Length: 519
Image 1 (cartoon, one colour):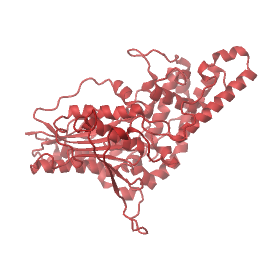
Image 2 (tube, rainbow, N blue to C red):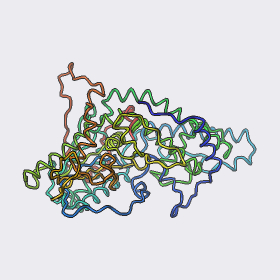
Image 3 (spheres, one colour):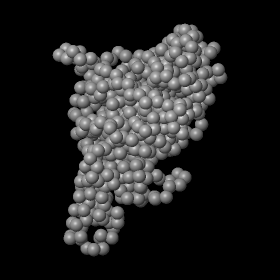
Image 4 (tube, one colour):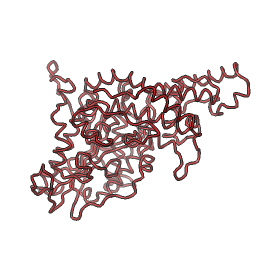
């Protein structure tokens, strides 16, 4: 099912009206004032995303309930530009120099006064770098701090002695994801070992082969998805064109430089990198007014919706192996409790670190960030409308759905004496409940009557079961291996991760193809 297009005339009218009425971006950020760092789609920093959520209180957990298992699916933290993007910024520097020379030769000198001073002689902060995409220091802090909050919030869950079978930490074989797992593990186990002043301890991180990791990198192996993305990308670019064209015209008129739409696209990317990684908002970001930022943010969110989210069911149905893994881990915890297994003999937490292409489909499988009756539509595999354009509000925002270090936590509770009135449980005692935390905040589940505390059996029946009529191998057109006798996958256990491993030396470079799709 292809995502419907926004009618082009309506799009143009909305864009023109907004741009004409727009005011310049305000530099100082106070209460209620515009802050470009909150509008960077999936390049938004985690602390900025959480700070703009507006949620100050948490709903109380019913008396007597205690957490027995935590399942985490997290995106890697803030990372440096990828090698491909570094080259784009190098080309932008050359292009800006050419535009300045052109302006000096062809326009009156007064016109040059309108050109921001930073453009003259600008060079990329990442000039000359041959590697990219690694986790930054800020990204390390995001995951480390997340872990300390999780440990504090669920103290009873993490009071056991560390064992890799009790607290399982898993990551993809991409350096920024595995480094994020390391940062999280350090925060989780700080003070619980004997290593160094921080009393750290060694721990293990499990990774599947990049070629066969259908749990955390299902998008790499799904041929149907790859074909859909290749077919759909040109359509998405066409949907973005009217906005880019109008922003380009506005910038040309404002600064008297002959920008092209490609220039504007690169400048918007530069704005996101400067604001997110360097906290610089008065250079590339300062070129755009508020309305232009809102619309450029929308183009990024549109792309994420169509190519990674609800735009097509293949985007999220390929995440079935991950959903099954999450449910299985909770079911095993329930069995352990029912059979009175002693603490330390069963898994209490399964902690996974991957990419936006992992977190976004998983959020869709749970039915998060939908508008109105959209949950019923995806259950019936009907097409969804693209996110509403500014100035209309929308639930689907990349800065909320999958910022750097964005995460979903499924918390399993045991609640004595609770009885579910759901028809799926037959009115029998149902003492296990699921709470979904998105970026650490409880969210209501449309599939569970918009409750944020859902009976486990109802969660399985209403949210999980409708997806199970599909099969990963079938929807992704994967045939069983015949020619090769090598195992389909292997598990690599990396031990002794502690502070010294925070340097990125020795990490494998990311392939160009992977860089293209990984956020």
